[in-house]
Length: 82
Image (tube, rainbow, N blue to C red; front, side, top):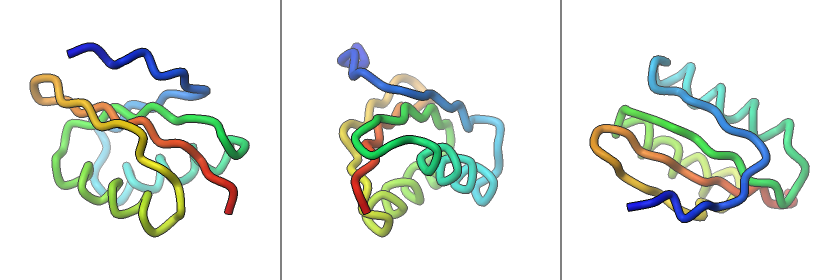
């Protein structure tokens, strides 16, 4: 399945980071974006993916799409106005 070519402003790969560090890296990245921009996140740990889904719900940001390809998951997170 293709990534649906969702336009994004920034991209981060957290595959080699441990869970607390990876979630923090996504948090810091999304905070640098203006509202309405999209962050593309590449992750390899399913527990981290679940944590990022919870992060989106708690932070008020929108998970636009979650794409699984082999062992990697790509998430597109839209920063909402908070």
